[in-house]
Length: 447
Image (cartoon, rainbow, N blue to C red):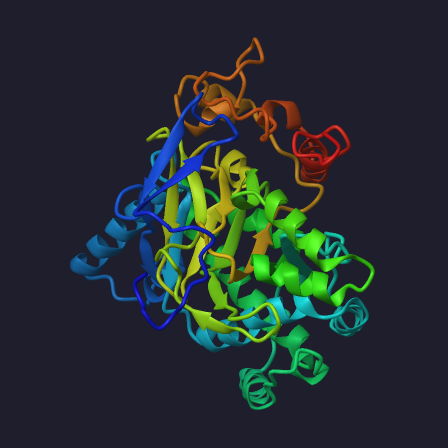
């Protein structure tokens, strides 16, 4: 590996090229080879100062021809990356005060995931957090901790700095020490508010390019977003959970977990909001399954382990983002509200190949329209009916995909089956969740 300091635990010897079997039939009867130096997408890096200049309505900003030309170039690049010919993704760097918040919050994801059920239940209740997966399942591969975030719910920055200092000073290697979670809720909200603001600024930039105020207004009308702190389990994390569960034989369950875990931490899907804002992930290395202690480490491959399907290249591509950056990703509602000017991203999260002691931590904020926002697909579907790209998710009159090579129906329900013209966002959300994860959904465990 790149850094000899890290002693990665191998299940088998890794190779230079990683063979990824695309079990969702994105490409029929084919296995894609993802090369570390090949099929990797390095995200466009939008600096925070440029984002603020683009989104600002302050006419006192410098308006020299050179500055105007530069900002026009940046805006065109932003829209190219978020639009039909791009990935639907970009990275934002240089966000003030964000680094310390990220560095404090992300390690808590793993610590929460490995707490015993009673202590974790108490911590989550104390800080107004919940989860949408059964946390008593010791074979789970992901542990998310969620909270509804409200716009303009900010803390005084002096108070936040004190919170971060307190968290650092009180850090303990004892996972049972609940004192280290005492400021979890406040830091969750503060970083969440920062990321909500990034999403609003990006929406404003897109509106300036497209015309009107549809995207920004739809977000502000919702008054809230959903924040989710996520721990992606290493194999050793699951062994730790199994060892702490006295009701199940440890040796049998560990073998069961290893065999049941797929190459994906998170299955293929589209987000269905307007934008998703994510922290670039943190990776934690754990030396032994006998200890809950872990330390931050570099990405084993240098990328984020977020992978997307690029319809323009007809291939799966790994995403690389600057360390400490924020990733902005277009969701299906953003695609629809922009009438196809933005491009929703089909994505999944893969595991580090052959490594059993690396976990992944991230914080995600989902920005969505108000629940009663009506979605119109007529202009969107008619305008882009003939394109051979991501808009082939809109079905034609025969209710068939325009691009037969994209047979994603097995694990990704077609948009035309989930969205009808005039549906509210609440109805679209409910139908989408049902068709992905309901009792007869394409990713239902009952299937």
